[in-house]
Image (cartoon, rainbow, N blue to C red; front, side, top):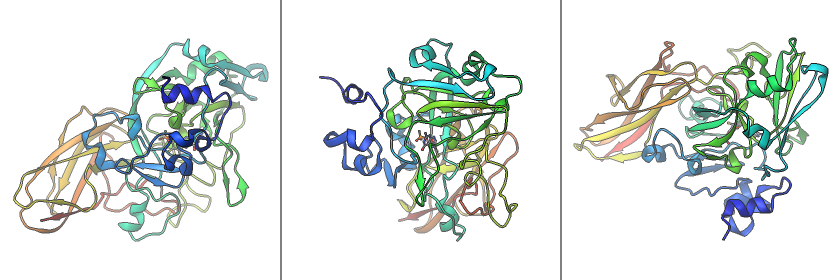
Length: 390
Ligand code: MTE
């Protein structure tokens, strides 16, 4: 009996909308969201075409987020592609002789591989806290804190592919583009999802990944090949990559002009520079409003990460005034997150607010408040995590 993946592949000679293909075998959520994998409510909150991981459910996972719990951020729907037909085309004025170069899946797999563990986080992760915690209005998907996961990515260096394609010495930007449908918003098509990377960055640590946690990439996470830009905002990591433009002139797309910059009173009228690295966060693996028992010792657990540098320290406070160090369970690493624990014996029944504050090796510490931006990106303030002591 072929498994679900082989069946899907069998039918998938050409890109097909996930909802249509998943048919009766898939849960109802798939048809509505365009996401292929099951989205059990204990593990995910569906937000339009996206699925947010339930951060509290990471409690029983290791340092890597299993693919079946990993958040999905889709502008449209998951295309079910086929590795036999898939091609990567490198093209543009920044190639020697401006001649496009094509790679098949087999050719890519034959190149030397690299494996990197890295978190992947949406720039808008934590967006809803601008409203719930800071009383501010922001636009975009109202993520709480589960638009993040960490995985072990295997693939080839984008640098190796670009060098084989023959990058000209005066190339400045590269722009990977996805094979998913064009993104239409407000009746206007912004084209297929794409965002430029400076050539220097493209040559430095960027992976064309074909495996996630030792398995072929799942459909929803970019099968057969996606870009991974460790520590950068999620939009840089283009899924289902089909072509990469290499240019001698700076490139732009709506994903680095209108979106993924900071706009608002604190920023210039044209917005900040395009966003690159993720910010710093520390989050309890506990539902908001969880009940805990007075007088009973309780092991609080959580995770912290920063796009700038490894996490150096996490402190927690259960009374809003005194801070004490949490114990880090993992060796802090660049591009990764650390799990941490702290003991707590709540004394009195009533409402309490738990706080966790991370500091990274570059000296960044979570502030009390994040400076507002209209699209709610890069929330980094200490999260006020409500619990009820009974
Ligand atoms: N790539 C394509 N082709 N289409 C998309 O919609 N979403 C981006 C990025 N790459 C997107 C994409 C965004 S905003 C994020 S946060 C990450 O993919 C999410 O990756 P995931 O769905 O594997 O978690």
